[in-house]
Amino acid sequence: MSSETTVECPMNALLRMLMGPWTSYILWTLRQQGPQRFGALKRMIPGISSRVLTERLKMLGDAGVVHREPLMTIPPQVTYSLTQRGAELSPVLDALDALARKWSQENAHAGQAIAQQASVADQEANMLSTID
Image (tube, rainbow, N blue to C red; front, top):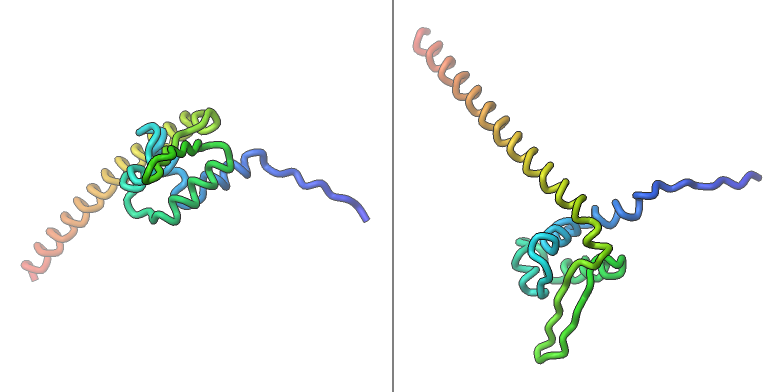
């Protein structure tokens, strides 16, 4: 029997963390808006449930990317912020943001071009139908 060693991609754990549902959106929001309380963060991320936000924040906290700062007030207040490790993701998040905006613009322009082509085709079809 031979023993095989598995070489895992060094980025695997990081990419798995970032790919989780809502994770990149939470990180991007904390990157853009700075430290936020739970309710404010939830309002900034339309469509996320409290349960999922709680799970994601816990996972990010366990990964050392997000810091949870509880205040012993009534009612309790908790503020979330990026740790130093989370801040190290800033260039990656900024690059993804720039790429997403570029692709969105390209898609919008492509959509306009397709709409214009469809309009021209409709006009040509209408002209042909009037000739018949």
